[in-house]
Image 1 (cartoon, rainbow, N blue to C red):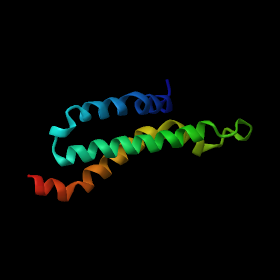
Image 2: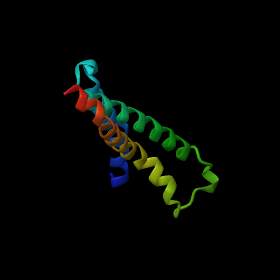
Image 3: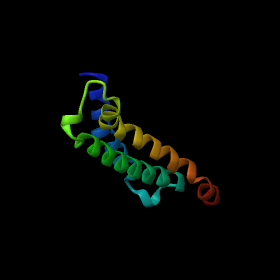
Image 4: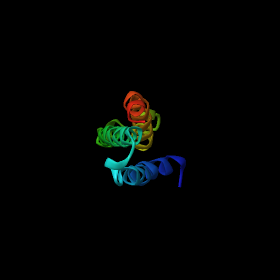
Length: 100
């Protein structure tokens, strides 16, 4: 298994499992954790769309030097989920301060 395959498996299974764990009893969680959950879900979903588009790119145009297709296909979902979660966590600052 290569590092790229590990990134793909993390994006396919670990990120949704993390969202499932955070989303359990979401209404009882603080505002920062709710924002983290929604950022994670939105980031992972958008990245999954990018990965699908990269996978459906015309096979005739694939080459060994095509870095972007491999980067989007393998690493978009884990990176998109992490970036979405971080953005969600950071944007909940005002709501979290009011709630505390």
